[in-house]
Length: 521
Ligand code: NAP
Image (cartoon, rainbow, N blue to C red; front, side):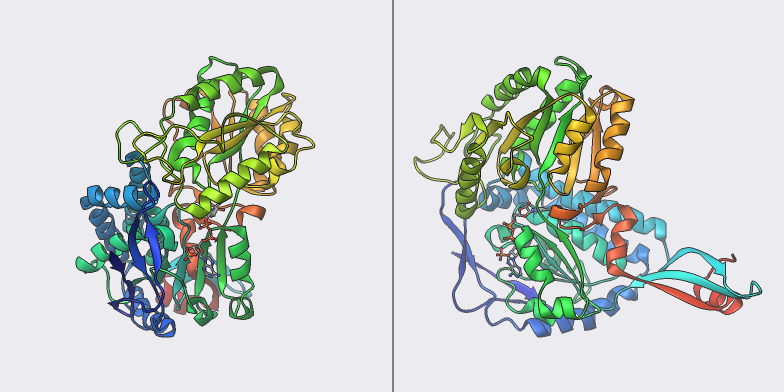
């Protein structure tokens, strides 16, 4: 069996001791093993700070962008082999794997383009100089420059390629070296990617390290100059935030956590309309794509009570067409969940939801899987529930079931009613609304925007072109308040802020202009 290594302090190292096993979630066969025992994480952190940081800070934005461009090209050139790894270890269908891998190369390429626009600078002026004194000679200028430590990235199991790349793109462009830790269960793809980068010598020493397995004491070595970006469950996010050195040294932390994303069908978007069909397409896609293991997937579907039966029947028709099975086979569009633990959690989650909602398709029983040996694999049927008492329901607004599962809820057709229900998610990554009515759009924006990181409005005019709410785009921010972790990533150049120190510089205008290129107030 293949043993995965970690790449730290400029070298590939095999851990010792007890190995964690990575499995194929379709067959349950062991694929690879890994351990990080014996790895000197203090040295790994020190090396990234001492080697990777200075190497990046010596480069201009344009030069850092060339590194990102090289990374994107490597992913693209090895796309087919990477897709195979994703199918094997993450249970991705070919289309799911492309979503992850092309998302990774696309995000790197997007940041490479932004870098080109930033050109030959090494830091950014933040706004114009402002006059502070009696005369225009005394000014203040804000600048943003790279933080001097290391960026540690802890990622979830569901996007091993994109998760690594989207965080690394922002950090490297901002000028911070990265230590990336993928979730152990699906680490094969991230491992293959970083192997490709090191074989091609794509990055200066210390710029990107990889921890393939348990983080050991890695996070205890972080100090005030470092940052930690975490994606995963709220519980782990909370544990990391409360670590004594993280809290005590004010280590900057970004958390991307759970979310009970809503999709709202507007009262005007009647069955048969383009907007209605877009709503059905996005909901069905989010339930089935990546077997529902997307942080942005729609979990709560709100439809006016007057059309709820029609919506239920139309969604059931679409979900009935979904082929679940071996993700390597053509025609299969729903693969397995990533791990046995996920299978247990999702089944328990469906049962919990079913205490107050009715299962209309799917559920926890046995069902037909294409090309899968009897009794094998971590499969769950696409599942739709209907909750007829959303005002008193609890679990549907409170418990994220991270699989191919969503619940349909009726509302009165009035914006204030559905806004109150959406808000019960207590902070989300994204909410989508399907309407061509401007007044309803305005009510939704101002009613739910403060509770979300992103809102998507589907309408007739964009029905044929908009990617659904589940697609995170590098141009737009990703993250959300409250339950969603309170974090923010991406959003074009906004994504660099987390890795940068903003400083106010006050002094004599001619000197600051000479040194910083500060503009006059
Ligand atoms: P998880 O158990 O919290 O694990 C996430 C990551 O944290 C993994 O890399 C895990 O490593 C690591 N980890 C766990 N305990 C740790 C500790 N004490 N110290 C340091 N690292 C630790 O979450 P999950 O079950 O893999 O992911 C599913 C959750 O992620 C879902 O709830 C989903 O909503 C959320 N998610 C959010 C987003 C977003 O962008 N907001 C995206 C994807 C997923 P090991 O694998 O080695 O244990």
